Amino acid sequence: MIVLSIDTLRADRLGAFGYTARPTSPNLDRLAAGGVRFRSAMAQRAATWPSLATVLSGLYPSGHGVLGNGYSFPPDVETLPKILHTAGYQTGAFVSNMCSAGHAGWDAFRCTSSNDARANRAALEWATSLDAARPFLLWVHYFGPHPPYFNGGDQASGLDPGYAGPLAPKKNVLDSIMLERNALSPADLQHLDALYDAAVMGTDRRVAELFGALETAGKLANTVVVVLADHGEELYEHNRYFYHSCSVYQSTLHVPLWISAPGLIGAGDVAQPVELVDVTPTLLDLLGVRSPSTLQGTSLVPYLERPESSGAGKPAYSEYDVSQVRTVLADGWKLVDNPENLAPDCVPGAPPGFYPIARTELYDLAKDPREQHNVAAEQPAKVAELRSMLAKRFAGLAGSRQQQTIPKGLSDELKSLGYVAN
Image (cartoon, rainbow, N blue to C red; front, side):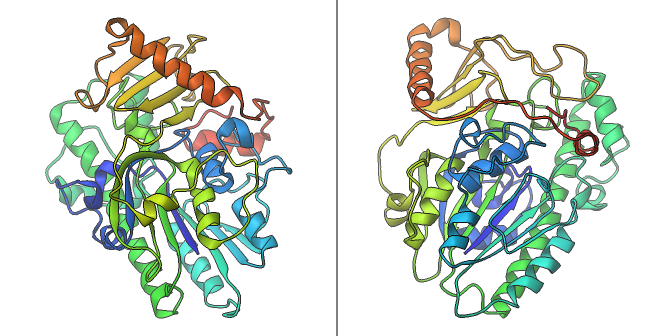
């Protein structure tokens, strides 16, 4: 089994998910065409470590305890690599982010510190040395289109020639514009799209390298492949903010997800909402491996068997750090519930109130997919209905909101990536 996760990849910037402005993802699109695409997949947090911990554990952030970037897995949390390692799988992880989260269950684990080419080389070296008689789990995580979008190299200048404005794929430049709350012109926004799209294109090329070599090595035959993103990116859609970890909106919570396996799974599209917390239950179900009773996600195998199945599907939820901020998406409505009236502290050096979240926000996504018009005041019954869903979902779940102390070296590293060390 192969799990490829891509940092900061918006679903709506892939051709397989409807993007037509540029051919950003031909190689990813080909992979997606061979599997079942989940068009309304939701991350449980718009931050890498909590989100990937949810993918690997089948638990919400409050369940696995990795509530923020820099947190570690508690030792008693059962994860996909632990479970499969116990079941006899060879396990290897080659990641360019989330390097110091107390990972366990991996025979081989290597951090490449935002270098995706190096992650490919390490992954392929390990994959080609495997015992062919034993199953394997390979996890590769790309830094991908993460800010400051340098993985696109200088390709943005070709996508948007002649741009002479302030934007550049440099963290200090982006931070300065963001923290000064500068309004961007249409030309600036066009170039921001070019910077981001170029980074997606750079990632797509890495995908071609990885899967081309895996196919040559015979590692894709009858192999379950999962491709997903940990979260998306705001790109100035809310609160004049470029990045992701502050956000509770669909620009960062809606993520690409698909699952394929030649000869085992057909192709198709699932419209109903699903969650990244469903990934581990689904994979264990597909592989016929025992699932822990503590899992909080749901197997998506019924969708893999009948992707065209009708119905509204289940609600999708997210959590936010150690706070009580949560979101729920159901039947086309999205509630952002902020009972503590929290003003997130999510950007180093940002003034208080930099990223305001109202106490109650409600969006009709069918009419307002970019969540620009809060209709909570006009829809009190819908607010009450969705708030009740949140209460029921999390009331009976075991979990922890214990804050962890992050070592200074790791804290400094996180700040260099644009994160506040929680």
